[in-house]
Structure formats: structure tokens, C-alpha cells
Amino acid sequence: METIYLLLRGFSVALTPENLLLCAVGVITGTLVGALPGIGSAGACAILLPATFKLGPVGSLIMLAGIFYGTQYGGTITSVLMKVPGESASVVTMFDGNPLARQGRAGVALGLAAIGSFVGGTLSIVGLMLFGPVLANYALELGPAEHFSLMVLSLSLVCAFTGESIVRGLIATCFGLILALVGQDIMTGQPRLTFDFQQLLDGIEFLPVAVGMFGLSETIESFEKKRSMEMIKADLGFFKVLPSLRDLGQSFWAMVRGTVVGFLIGIFPGAGPTISSFISYGMEQRISRNPEQFGKGALAGVAGPETANNAATGGALVPMLSLGLPSSPSTAIMLAALIMFGLKPGPSLFREAPELVWGLIGSLYIGNTLLVIINLACIPLIVLFMDRIRAYLPLAILLLSAFGVYSYRNSVFDIGIMILFGLVGYGMRKIEFPQAPVILGVLLGGAAESSLRQAMVMSDGNPAIFVTRPLSAAFLCLTLASLILPPLFLRKRPKQD
Amino acid sequence: MDEGAPGPRFMPILLAVFLGILNVLYWMDVFFFQRGGKLNLPQMSELVRPAGFILVGVLMILLWERAGVVATVLIASFIELKGIQGYSWARSIWIGFLFSLSTWVLFQLVLRVPLPAGPFEFLLSL
Image 1: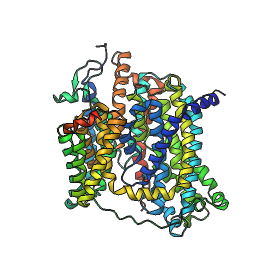
Image 2: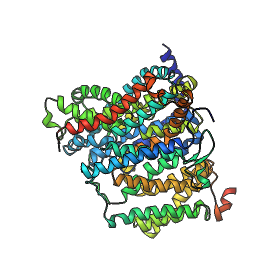
Image 3: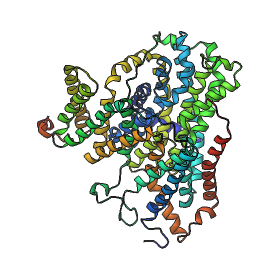
Image 4: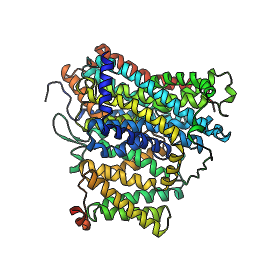
């Protein structure tokens, strides 16, 4: 009963004209960003974060969340029509969506993807409402030792899920943690790793690093080769994208399974929409009566993964809101937004800022409804807009990034940091080092160090506190398992193409 | 400082030790398990445009406070569109003006970010 009351309160926040407008701007931006190859949801969130500073925490979070789940809808359009995924989570949709488009059924593929995304997105919010507050209540009992171990577990899971090599993930994490240490020490005020640069005394801000790594590095990479993108001509009017009842019936269970898989996988740090869409596709292919249809235009091959990648966005918000732990770069940026507004992300957020949390949840329902309408009714408009804006996108990204980063502290030095990390991010992409652990390391580094030192104070300098407290020991055991098991599992698995 | 609390050097040293161990593991990974051999590095000719884009960014940093953001955006846009993307003179200048004006309106007038105006200081009184 209390949940329903809180949800209604959330709707009263989300339905104010200002927040409604911000939600619409967020989901439309997300759809366009998702449709445009060369910039992902994390990049878009990072670039637009400074523009949301004037909106207050609720408005800012509503808009950023809109971009986050809007990108999962938009990525499908280019996957189906051009065979170029706008988002990594839409790669799988390409396998069957594009063959469907070549068979003259582009509208059905896009319509099913939109409806599946709506189902997955909406049901995952129900999951968030049910699990989020419960998890937050448990998390309130955690002490500094448990907090530290939980952050270590979260970082190790990101390493385990992103990229092929855990060692590379761990190196990237350490790099991020070291960046978080730059500046004055939180307890003594002594400068660390500043190399006598006055500008580094305040530390390296999260924003320029995130914008550089995710916004700029993708753009730099897009300059390497001129891609030719051929779009399949299709009639995408409203009635053409509405799937028939037969199509919906064939995809119903794929959507249900996609929702469950997506939500559960989305909760794990590092997993998120991309992995959930691949797992859903594999599962659908395995249980299908006609597995040979997959790759040639199977409806379940579009509906399942599209539902899963949207359900994962709801799942990803569970640890972010309940534990203050980001599970992906996009949620890390949302978390950074909360910190920049002076809020303390974590379990107390549900109690201390119920308007923010439930306002966000209310806006997720509204945003998903807006998105299914936009994606069923406005696909021709989106395609036209994409075609016109694509040529100027790199310049727009560079300018928005520079202005956004500058507006945070009015510092040209931050623009320099952004370009430097754009280069670093580009280099990391080329040598196949994952970028997500760096961002999470920068974000969690300060809090992790603070918890570590508080725990050591409590134990009079005895590090055994991390293994003698049961929950902390359990988190550390899971950390070890997350680092040891994946390589063993991969080694035992026979090599496949 | 609290009794038993690690000092400010604790975390940097801990991370440095971890990084050292991880580097050894990384090279073992590359040399013994051959997991580093499938890098898809770009050709030198493919790096010209990315390098140009980065140089435009560096130029923006140099000009930002000296020339003001209006002129900086105009120059950076023109170089990016004409020099890197290969658009016509007229289109590059026209789009440059459009970007310059729209970023000024959005950030200075709408979002109230105090931007350096340089020689275009009269715009601040508008």
C-alpha cells in the first residue's frame, strides 16, 4: 500500500509540466542518439549532464534517465534499416531485423521492437519498485567494511563482464582509482599525485574524464573510416509498423523471457543491456522449434533481445538507487549528477529524497509510454532527421562537450583534460582495453578509499576486519569468484566461431 | 589523524603494487597465452582525420579565452567542416556561423554560463 502511495507521489512530481517536458526531451534525445552510430548513451549522458545543472536534481535525473533508456529504443532503427547498430545493445537486433527488412517487413520488425521495448522497460520498472526499497533497507545496515567490500565486488564484476580479459579490466580499474586519488587527501589535506600542478589540487573531475572517454573517443574513432550506410527503403507509416495479432502472439513468450533475463542481468554491474540482449537471443534460438530461422528473419530474434535490453535499463537502476553503485557508465553519470547536486547516493536516498526516487520511477513509466508512441508513429521523421544531422554530428559533439565541460567549473583546463581523455579513450579502444572500469573507478575511488580508511580506524589498523565481518567476507569471496571463475569457464568451453 | 587510520600514501602505494602485479600478468597473458595478438590498429593514413579533429580541439583550448568563444567556435567549425570533412567554403562558413550563434544563445543566454566573449564583449550587453 505504501508503495502505491509513494508511486502516486512520484507521478505527481513527474507529471508537472517542467518534468514532463524534460522527460520528453530526454527520451527524444535518447532515441536520436541511439539511432546515430558514433555516440552511445553514456557519451550523450556525459555531454548533456552539464546542461542539466540548472534543472535541479529531479529534472536532471529524469532527463538523463530518459536518454539512457531512449537510446535502447533508437538503436534498433539503424540496426534494422541500415545493418549498422546505433547502440551496442542493438547489434543482436540486426541479425534478424535486417533480414526482415529485406523481406519487406521492416515495419513489423521496428513495431515489434518498439512494443517489446515498452513491455521490457515497463515491467522492469515494476521490478525496480519491488526490489529497490527492500535492497535499500538491507543496505542501510552496512558498515564501512561492508561498503568497501561491496564496492570492490562491484568493480570486479564490471571487469568480469566487460571485455575479454579480466587482467585488462583490472588494469583499467586501477587506472580509474588512481585518477580518483589525484588532488588533496580527504583526511589530511595533503596533495597527492598533483606533480605541482595547481589545477590538479582540486582533483580530476569526473565529468571531463567521462565526456572525453565516452563522448569524444567514439567521435575520434568515427573519423578513421568513412562508412557508407545504405538504408533500406520501406513504408514506415503508423499502420505499417503495427504488428499483427499473429506476429504479437508469436513473440509474446520471447518478450516475457526477455523481460526476466534483461532485468536480472541488468542488476549485475558491468552486464547491462548488451549482454542481456545476446543472452536473450541465444536463449530464444536454443528453445525455438525453428532454430534454422534465426539469422533469416525470426520474429523472436527481434522481440526477445529488444525486450531484454530495455528491461536491463530498469535492472541497472536497482543497484544505482538502492546501493549507490553504478552498473554501467550511463548509471555512473547519473550517480555523478546526484553527487554534483550535493546528494548522497545510496540506501538512504529512498528515505531522504523520496520525491527524487519516486519522481524518477514515475517518469520512467511516462517515458516508456512516450517512447512507444514516438517509435510507432515517428520513425520516418527520425530517419529523415538522422540523415540530415549525421554529417555535422562530430562537430556538434566537440562543441557541446567543450561547452558542457567548461560550464561546470568555468575552467579551460577541464576542456584540456577532456581532450586528453578523449585521446586516452581512443587509444584504449584500439588496444582493446575496456573503458567502463576507468569511469567506475574514478566515480567510486573516493568513496572506496573513505570506507577503507574508516573501517581501518574502527579496527585500529587491523585489515582482518574485512574478512571477520560475515557480509564483508561474503562480498570478498564473491569478488574472488567473479575474477577466477570466468577465465576457468572460458578455458573449458570449446572454441566456437 | 585517527589512530590506526592509513595515511594518504596508503591507497596510491596499494594501487601501484596492484598495477605492478597486473602488468606482469598482462605480459604473461600476451606472451604465454597469445591473447594480445589480434589488435586491429589503424593505418597511418587513417589517422590523419582523427588527428585533425584532435588538433581542432587543441586549437579551441588555445583560443577559448584569448579570442572569445564566438570566434573560437567559428574558426573551429570552419576548420572542421572545410579542412576535415571537405565541405564547400560557403557551407562551412554558414554552418560555422550557425553553430557559433546557437552555442552562444544556448549557453550564455539560456543556461547563463559566463562565457569569455573576447573581442565580442558587446554581445554581453545584448
